[in-house]
Image (cartoon, rainbow, N blue to C red):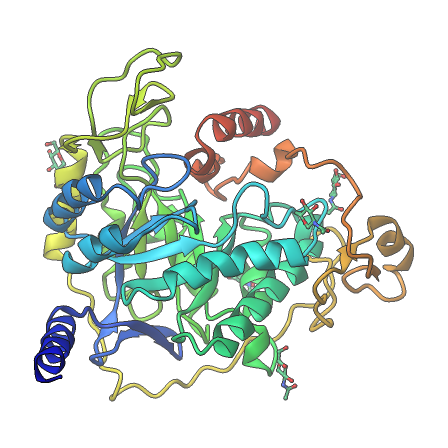
Length: 446
Ligand SMILES: *[C@@H]1O[C@H](CO)[C@@H](O)[C@H](O)[C@H]1NC(C)=O
Ligand SMILES: *[C@@H]1O[C@H](CO)[C@@H](O)[C@H](O)[C@H]1NC(C)=O
Ligand SMILES: *[C@@H]1O[C@H](CO)[C@@H](O)[C@H](O)[C@H]1NC(C)=O
Ligand SMILES: *[C@@H]1O[C@H](CO)[C@@H](O)[C@H](O)[C@H]1NC(C)=O
Ligand SMILES: CC(=O)N[C@H]1CO[C@H](CO)[C@@H](O)[C@@H]1O
C-alpha cells in the first residue's frame, strides 16, 4: 500500500514538473494556462504523407533543431489516429512545441463543389480529436484547409461551420479540454473578409469557430506592411472577436527567404490583432519551401526506404542556409507586446453575418447550418436562390452520391491575392497525389 502510494505520488509529481501549460482562447487571443498570451511561431511539419508523429527518434532530431530555430508550434496536416503518438508528443512538449493538427484527410475533407458534412466525416474527425485531446501540447484542431477558393464556392461555408459546431459539441460532450477548433483559409482577397466574418458570426458562439487562420503568400522578398497586402489583411480584422493567425506563410521568390514579414507580424501594427504565424515548411522538397534538408535530392522515381518524391525524409535535419538562419534571427529579435489573461477583457463582439451577393458570397446571412447527413443540392439551390438565397436546398439523404470524388482543379488553385501564387499546402498534405493536384491548379490558373 504505502510503497504503491509513494510511487503514485512520485509519478504525479513528475507529471506536474514536466507539464507544458495548455492553450485556450479568450476573446481574440490565445493564452497559456499559466496566464500568458501565446503567439504561434510554428512550422508546417509533414515529413511523410501518413503521419510524421510516430517515429520518436525522428521527432527528437527535429524537435531539437526546431528549438534552436525558436519555434513553439508545428502544424501537421495528416495523422493516423490509430497510431501511438505518446512519444513524439512528449518529445515536442519537452521542447516547448505545440501541435495544430488537421482533423480531415483527402477522403474525409469537405469539398467546395459537392459540399457535405456526414456521419463518416464526423466519425473520422472525432477519432483524430480522441487521440490528440489527451496531449497537453495539442493547441488546436482545423476542420478544413482551403476548402473555399471561389465566390460561388461560398455555398460550402455552412458545411465548414457545421463541422466546427459539431466537433466543438463533441469535444464538450466528452469533457475534453477546450482545445480550440478552427479553419485554415486560402488567401483569396475577394472571398476572405466575408468568409472570416461568416465563420465567426452569429450570437451563438457554439456555432462559430474558436479561431480563424489564413494561408498567405503575399509578402515576397523586400516588401513592407503596406505594399505586401498585410495592411489590408489587418484592416479587415481589427474588430475580430476570435484569434486569427497565419496557418501558412512563406513566399519563396526571390531566394533566399529573409522572412522580413515576421517583423510586421510580431510588431506594433499587427501583433495587437494577430496571434502569430506558421512558416511553410520544415522539409525541403520539390516545391522548394524547406528550412531543412535530410540529404540531396534523388530521382523522383527512387524507391529506397525513407524517400518519397525524390527527397529523403528521415535522419539528421540540416539547416538550409541562409533561410533557416534568417528566420531564426528574425524570431530571436522579435518580442510582440502582449497582455496577461488576467489583465485582458475582450471587447469585440461577433461580426455581422455577410449578406448574399451573387457570385461573391452566396450564403444569406445567418442561415440555419446543415445537420449531419444533409448534402448540398446545387440544382435546387439555383432554382431557389432568387427567393431563399440561402445555402441552397439541403436534402437529408444520408448518402452522398452526387458528383465524383475527383478533385477539381479550381479547388487547388488557392491564389494569393497579390501574387497569384498557388498555395502549396495541398501538396505537402498529399505528397504524390497532391503534387498532381497542385500542378493542375497551376494550369488552371495560367
Ligand atoms: C462555381 O462556378 C463554377 C464555374 O461556373 C462551377 O464549375 C462550379 O461548379 C460552381 N461551384 C458551385 C459550388 O456551385
Ligand atoms: C447554440 O448552438 C448550439 C449548437 O448548435 C445549440 O445546441 C444551442 O441550443 C444553441 N443555443 C441557443 C441559445 O440557441
Ligand atoms: C476589408 O478591408 C478593405 C480595406 O483594406 C475594405 O475596403 C473592405 O470593405 C473590408 N471588407 C470587410 C468585409 O470588412
Ligand atoms: C460522406 O462524405 C464523404 C466526403 O464527401 C463521402 O466520401 C462519403 O461517401 C459520404 N458518406 C456518406 C455515408 O454519405
Ligand atoms: C534577416 C536576415 O538575417 N537576413 C540575412 C539572410 O541571409 C543573407 C545571406 O546570408 C544575409 O545577407 C541577410 O542579412
